Length: 297
Image (cartoon, rainbow, N blue to C red; front, top):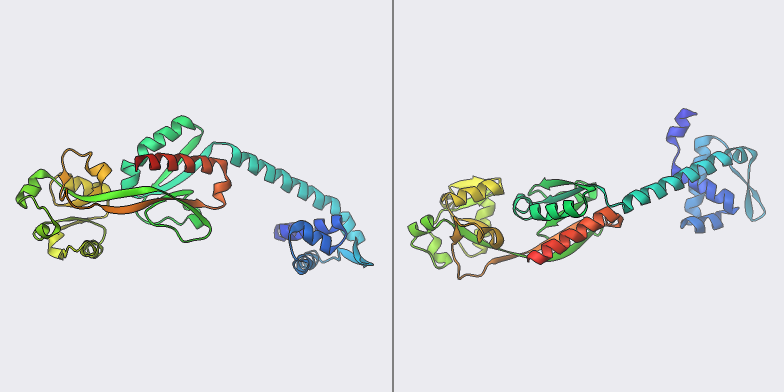
């Protein structure tokens, strides 16, 4: 019997309970939002699992077999327990407390999120925050995170996305390094410049060529996988590096390399899973992030 209990499918048990209470497959199917053939298959599967017949036909309706009648009270108890579980889960989801996982790039996590998280904790002290600082795109469908801050519009229909602003990026370097280059005024003046690349050198070169700057591998003597290390190298005069205007302009040790050129503009998206957006905790954090990020851009 214990083996049977571990194998029982709640959907099939629910189909049995609904049919027992409705008295017909058609009425039970309407109550559960299923088709009649689907409901019939679930009941037939449950009969095979239990090794007993559950219903007998009586005219156009169904009546319980004696065995099914003996099981019905147990099944009703299971249904009541499931209802209490659903209510408890709903209540928990409406409480603004518990853990929240936010994923963002390392740069965003270090330079943008700290004051926002401080505000979140001050407003909702019952919420604990797990920040996943990574440049890898976390899989929200697999619950690797609850909320993501991204620069690309997600295409998955299961995700909810809100564009909360646009960021502007520029090349930065120390005044001392720029003096060695003769204070360049345009991209063409950077033919002899050296860059600190983030990520793969080939990807960085491809990105520079998209800006009509034919950078060579010889111009990228330093490459790192960390945004924070990348920015520290730029501040120490190791070469030219890219950052957002908010971060770059606030750093006194560097300046814009090409102050008169247009910035690189990229969107900021806030993303969560459609199911998670029904949780009050996730919704509150999502809206707070959206408000804070929108006010910064």
